[in-house]
Amino acid sequence: MKNIFFGKNGFVTCVKTSMLLVFILLNVSCQLQSQESEREVFATPGSAWDDDNFQTEVSFVSANKLFNKYDPPSINKIDSQWNAKAWRGEKIHTQVLVWSQVPVENVTMQISPLKNDNGQSISPDNIQARFIGYTIADGMDAKVKGCGMEPGQDSLLVADVLKNENHINIEAKTTQPVWLSVNIPKDAPEGVYKGNLKVDTKNGTNLKTLDFSVEVSNRVLPDPEDWEFHLDLWQSPDAIARVHNVEKWSDEHFEAMEPYMKSLADAGQKVITTTLIKDPWNSQTLDIYDSMIEWRKKKDGTWTYDYTVFDRYVSFMESLGIDKLIEGYSMIPWNLKFYYYDENLGEETHIVAEPGSKEYKEHWDRMLNDFARHLKEKGWFEKTTIAMDERPMEAMQKAIEVIKSADENFKISLAGDYHPEIESDLFDYCVASNQVIEEEIMAARKEKGFTTTFYTCCVEEYPHTFTVSPPAESTWLGWHAALKGYDGYLRWAYNSWPEDPEKDSRFGKWPSGDTYLVYPGPQSSIRFERLIEGIQDYEKIKILEKEFVENNEPEKQTKLQNILNSFEIAALENQDAGEMVDKAKKILNDF
Image 1 (tube, one colour):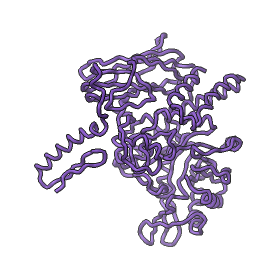
Image 2 (cartoon, helix red, strand yellow):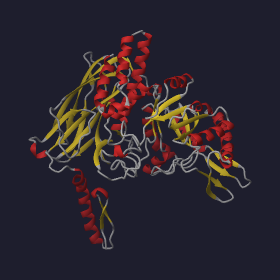
Image 3 (tube, rainbow, N blue to C red):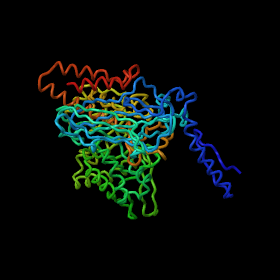
Image 4 (tube, rainbow, N blue to C red):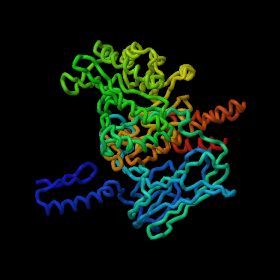
């Protein structure tokens, strides 16, 4: 009788036995082995802990670096001071590292107000110190393998989860990073604000007091809802329902979704992701996207469309400030299956229809005409697009023909390769990062009020937002958007979680972290925070560009453009994203 088997990466799974005593003994054994397995798998042999003569150290470190949990960090100098610059309305951050030879219980972070010489202050309510949790990720070669990689090879333990905990226990011979964030109030007077962060323990022992200061500029960053950057992160309500164990579209579901979508709104999200059909992406995520519209074929052969869920979700997102665009996926699902409820059959069924076929046109003609009517009644028609992604140009042309025949004023979105033949039909066009759109086309689209963005997916080695990607690459994306004249950036998954992302960020054959940017809780991530940082930089660039033109300051215009010119993707082959971003931000903040 087999009682124990070893899963991937040395994690032990216990199987029940018929003998209670044996089960208890084996269960205890499994728990002990599970506790040891993480260190056994991820600790580096020949660790240098014993070579250092200290107990516990604390230091500010670069937010660009990820530190190994089971190795002492390579730090030449302990840094007890952090000095930063920021605009009013900006969110800035850095990283603190605690590493210890001995166990340390109940470590907490005590934050003081930040005060200037005039007695004015920034409240600790605007400052967060979050412990960073580790999750399993694919090794560094995952970035090279990209789409279709074999999972579970060369795994790493990577710091990424910004945990909702006010204290933590630190094991002996481990490293614990902390994420320090400061939100500068828009009404904070200009000046230098100083404060400190106390790293304490359960018994009141002070491990370290770190001083930090923020020089607040007189410049003001707009509120996120007013940012120009067109952020489009696809939401998965289905994943939230699973993780929170609530009935889909119940009051409890919307209550669970609110903090996630509020965080998304605070990042400047502009798009509401809706589904017109069931499973538009052929089950490529753990939680299959359900349709927000019920398609029903009546017994007499007529069709009805119930928009109850669609309407409630759109209204819910609008109430949180995400209200620029509603995108409905997809008229060209990856499996070409179109589900509906058939009253004669008494069950759900589907048809398979290719764009261009008679069945396809009939199926969508009815719905699109009714959908247009409904959207106009709700006042949403002008900001709704019929959206598709990574579909062949020929299929797109046939779908566009059907859409325009239903209502010539329907707006259309596509995320995929650049096709000049259909560019003018696409109100919202998001192209892959390796695509090139002519400058005159970009200018013409902007003149017409069209939106043009770019995206990254599993094919790019860099820049990216994978769990193992250098954190600064998330920020780098905003600078690249500014260089190329894009309106913003798209990622296919804000929260399409694997089974337990806080423990393991891998899913299927996607590179780890590819399917989400935030964690259940909700809990943020280093990647998400750094992405927001890049969006803020984009907003600063746009504000300064406009100011330099209006004030006729060509030297400043040239200096700013020279900074941007370095943010070509090819530059990352030989340059570090963190060094590029730090250098550029310093010049930007000095204007």
